[in-house]
Amino acid sequence: MKKIKFLLIPALLLSAFACQDYLELEQTGDTISVGNALQTQEDYEELLWSCYDVIANTYDGRMQVLFDLLSDDLAAPNANADYTEVYNRNMLFFNSTLGGVYGQPYFAIFRANSLIEALDNIPFSDPARKISMEAEAKFIRALGHFDLVRGWGQPYGFTANNSHPGIIYKTKTETEILPRNTVKEVYDLLISDLEFAEANLPSSNGDAATSWAAKALLAKIYFQMGDYALAAQYASDVIDNGPYSFDAASVDRFTPMPSVEAIFYTLSIDLDRRSGAFTGNYRSDGSSVPTLRASTEMYQTYGTDTIDARAAWFLIKDVGQPNEYYGVAKFNSDYFSVPVLHITDMKLMRAEAFAELGTNLAVAIQDVNDIRERAYAGPSMNLPSGSSGAEIIIAARWERRIEMLGEGDRVQQLKRIGAIQNLPITIRLAPWDCPGMILQFPVTERTDAFELNTTGGCN
Image (cartoon, rainbow, N blue to C red; front, side):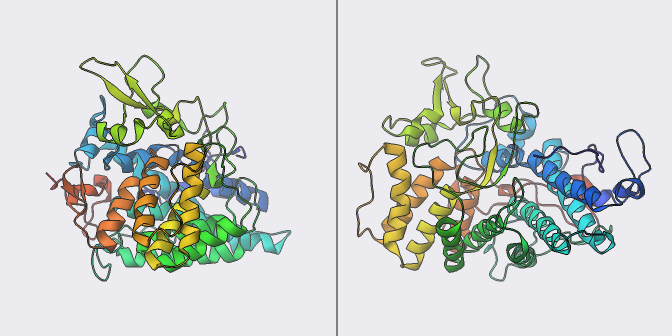
């Protein structure tokens, strides 16, 4: 990813709401005031790239780890009190890890909004670039808000009209005391931003967002909403027409160079290692016990099938000892680029969506079988042709859980199924919709208008 030549936002600030003066600071050290730094199109290009820089910090494993701690894929954390609060679904508003992760997307969102608000003041050598910069900023804004609302609000479908509280969807830099937007309002704004991005982003854009990335994110949003027709439509467009390939040879998407499956990714190199929260929490090829390990149930379900190439993602450590545990070897590398949106996810969404709709079942079966043939080096575990929609759904969900291990996906799928299908899903013996299944806001967010989430209440 392009090197950022200047920093506009101090890293110690934890909330975009408290930082209305970010761009008004005078030049001190490495911080440059807006008047001195942002004068030309090139300056604003740097500001845009700084948004991607923050996205790389957000998706280096920090956001994904918090989601997975709420799922049934992991054992209790080792020696991390903040993570233990999340795992136990009893989060306090003074949890600094939660506050730090919550603030990261809003850094990028604030910068994106700063750019959008300034576009009319920038002299552009190419007027088309003005529109594409706005589209990139809106993609970044939507990406950050999507994971914020999934983490800090109950899912779409939790109430019949989705009037339950979500998060504040920030569309401007002005500081205001606001209530949380409803989840419906958040999703409407997500779709609006991404439809603009889809229409105005280029199809090829180096390491930055493309129209295909906007379509892939729309597919995920519609899938989370239970709108399976639109989810399948967008996923099919990306799979069938986009410049990406399903990697039939390797189950490993977390590689130094971006995977051929990566639709949108954060780039990591040896000098910056922007995948540090994955390796720092999961790495299990050393002598020390990692902070995060697989649950016994997860290992027994997926790690004992030695024919499956994905069984190599598990390591049994301290065998036979009282402290025996199951390491997650998926992230045992010094660094790797992180695929935030990728083709395997699109195939799994399309398979389940078509099965829910009862249409294109042959395509859905092939999507599942593509993944199984890669895992088993052949068709031995393939779904039979003519499988029913119910059978396809079971298979797609089975494959999704192992394919997306450690990617923050599992809890979102369980919540989607519970909310959209009104099923009594339990996650480690707790209802999917209990108060502790959503993350807690930092105490700095509390105002007369903004209510924090309920603490605990699951067990």
